[in-house]
Length: 149
Image (cartoon, rainbow, N blue to C red; front, top):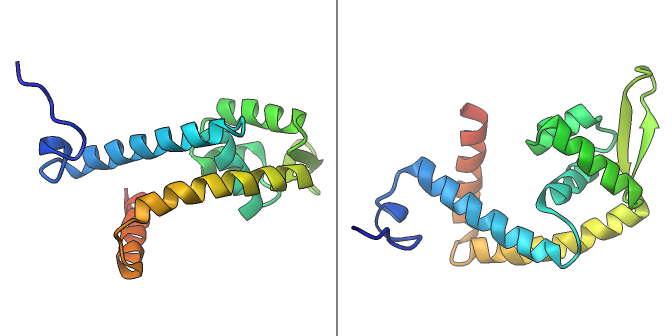
């Protein structure tokens, strides 16, 4: 029986399929992020929701699910937990009575700042050895994949 090589070698390395390598990199990144954020009692999906609310305050739960690439059910649980913890608050939409808009509270912004410090350490590891131009190219390539597929 042939044993598969470790990540970064053989078909799990430069000889591998791009889609597999993207998934492998995403899985490794998510695991590192989850382990780091666990120190703060925050999950990776909670971090994404907090990040999107800072960038786009006033999103509804459905909009949050779309931009965070999570299911509406998952976002519903995250919203309940973050609201319970005082990290976010809801306000009614000015023209759509049944729609709730979500924003960060001061407590949520402070929590997100702590999370960002943990995430930045991982970002530095991801960018290690890349020039600023190399980082730009990779960001452009990844964004184009997300937009085109």
